[in-house]
Image 1 (cartoon, rainbow, N blue to C red):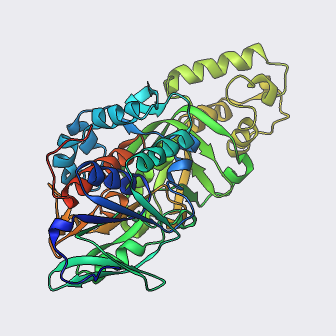
Image 2 (cartoon, one colour):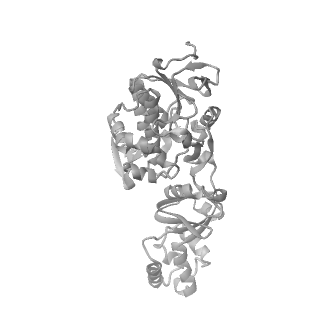
Image 3 (cartoon, helix red, strand yellow):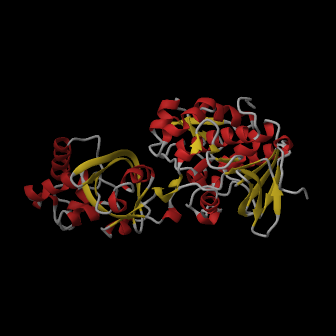
Length: 428
């Protein structure tokens, strides 16, 4: 093996550490730009986390313009302005189309593979890596970066094996889903190189509630509902879409999106009040009129049967209990006061956030390498020559909808091209 000291840039060997979306893109970008590339992956296969994204469907990107992409990455999205300008959503779509992955665009401009298979996305990337002669080393976990004076000269793994390189791209992911390999190794490596690490925290995470009744509805999914959040009496966010009840509280797309705002509040958002609008298409007055009609039509039925069409069957007993209405009471016996409680619950079913689920269960990690210490045009470290960063390892995060993966593809592309010394040469 070559000595890893006194390494000349002309040898142009790039090590990419991490075989997730950012790492695979970085490896391909560096290879297409002319570098010899070795990709280190600590697992037995690449794209382990990518293969389970989007409930196994993989929301590849969001077909939005750069300004909108940045808007939906509230965690330092502006840092990626240059990356998105060079590798926008359309570039991602063209890239996967070239790989043979047919795409479709759904509500909110979310882009998925036509097959609804994240596995197809991973397989297409693996095939491209093989065709490009990227050397993939599995079960290779980085222990430290090798340096000489103020620059990178290689990397060493946990077995003590060293490999020389002109540049290293760190793309080890965040700290969520550690079983997929995102265990925070990149933070340690970057910190040892002199970088500041913003404390990682869950960004897109399910929420635990003080109330235990959601556990009674575990598995129930509500579509086209609105969830609003209030902290210290002030509205802090609102989302419309799908919600899922769990044994600990709430999950689903709108909960994950709101959690990005809630977890940034003091104490991780504990005490945030939630209001679930189960009938957002109806005003309180319209809902009251409908309720009155249902009661009149089913006046001789038990109230739980008379109101069967008003909410999902699994939810109605809970609503009646919270409204303090016996389910076996006949509809015509319902008092005006009791009737008024139901529209109020349907329009603003109250819940209180206890805490987000642990970081290990978060979809995306907030925090990471301080972007002020990274060149946004090249993804290069400002602390150590030859070191580059990509993906979730950076302190950049956004909402659901393909924004986080687009950040991974774009930062990976820029980091790979830069590490190869050929930024500006498109490979698509």
